[in-house]
Length: 152
Image (cartoon, rainbow, N blue to C red; front, side, top):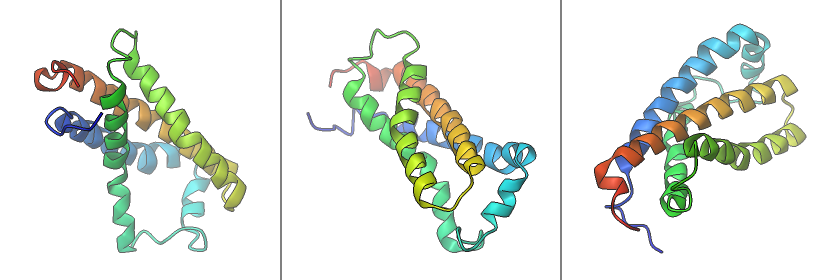
């Protein structure tokens, strides 16, 4: 089954990507540093991370859109299987978080010299962003007359 761009709900993906970007900025720059003050010192370690002034750091602003575009692809191909599920947006967000985050975070913990607190912060922020992305994307996609009513 091939992806048909006229049936892929791009505006739901873009809206959810913008929501995830906004949430990530609030979570990562205000909430987490307030409750985990040691994170800023760890991020400032240029032996582990690029400095914030590096132009490549701007790619971080694309990551929410890439994440939600991936969610959109998975949802595009499996939405009929989830058609009658209760709370499918919450379940989808949770499963995508488990599949997309946990293995990478375990590898990061095993191979990089970052603290378990940082891994925990990434787990928490990833979970919140995954849930926001799934909720916004699926609810908007399913209500969009042009995206949900035609068959695959």
